Amino acid sequence: MPLDDRLGTNIWVAPTADGKRRQITEFWEKRTFIACRISWSSDGKCVFAAVGEGDADIVQMDGLLN
Image (cartoon, rainbow, N blue to C red; front, side, top):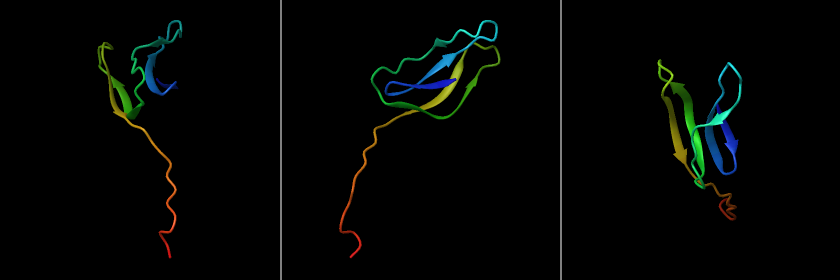
């Protein structure tokens, strides 16, 4: 499951046996997001995720329509 924490999103797993969550990625201080769905291999050993990095700013632009 992707969980939004601190600056971005990390991936966590939760076994069905006990439900105890465990973080499996650590993107540190990078603003990271999951770009699309997460998938896993049929043997359960690998997780696949398309990730992206980014920052966003809000900008006000005046005087464009006169």
